[in-house]
Image (cartoon, rainbow, N blue to C red):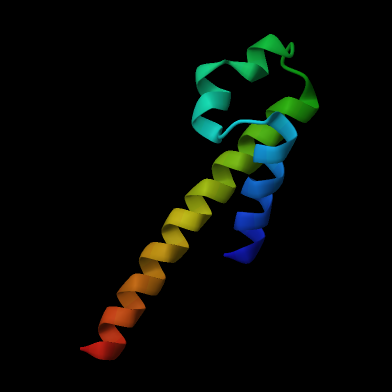
Length: 67
């Protein structure tokens, strides 16, 4: 979880916006579909999905442990 959060934080600082703004502003297209920017897009998307998935699983585990 920490690794995904660090990736998200790094990319927010690098592009000075969150992922939703990054997509909305079509940064990948504006930067000419460069390898670096496309890779950042996929890394960012994976990190956010990982954060969401892991938090959901941790919540489920907490509920099972308490139940």
